[in-house]
Amino acid sequence: MKQLRWIAIFSAFALFGLVGCMHQETSIVQSEPTIQKAKMVETQAAAHNSSFEANEKAEVSTPSQLSIPTLNIQAPIEETGLTKDGQMGVPDDGETVAWFEPGTVPGREGNAVLAGHVDDKTGPAIFYHLEKLEVGDEVLVSDENGQVLTFVVKEKEAYPRDEAPIRDIFGPTYNRQLNLITCTGLFDRKKGTHEERLVVYTELKSTGTTASN
Image (cartoon, rainbow, N blue to C red; front, top):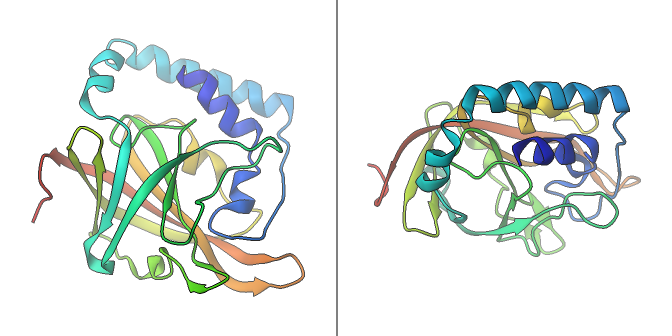
């Protein structure tokens, strides 16, 4: 299952052109050698962790709520996948965050991804202040079982729109990571999108039934 999900992410990475922006439509087609390399990496990871996978599934469930205390953000999380055009679905509005469901569940081993708009036609959106996050800040995700997962910001980086490190953001890892994505930089009116993508990388710190202090 993990192998199929990673290949789907890697081979239809139109999503990064869309993330966090209301108007951009673009697609990137991956070559067959790239897909085969992704298969090899994922197979190695699966072999290393096959005995752990059953327990991993029992630990966390579908994410439902995002909270970032330092930015005063509270947002519902909706599931999204790939559109019929091979692009990543985005939140229906500026106040909702989208979890890329073909990828990792937040709290499980791998790179989970949440995307939100930086703005929309009415003004600033849920991730408008995401760039203000600093190393050490906490990001909380509640799941459908009532657990609260506490992630800690490790780094943040802005990339040119078409030059983001796909594998670092969506690819397999033995760590339990959550990456937040939105648009940043100047708005290119001709292309209908911002010139850069902001990625905030976080790693799981703890789980519990209440948020940590």
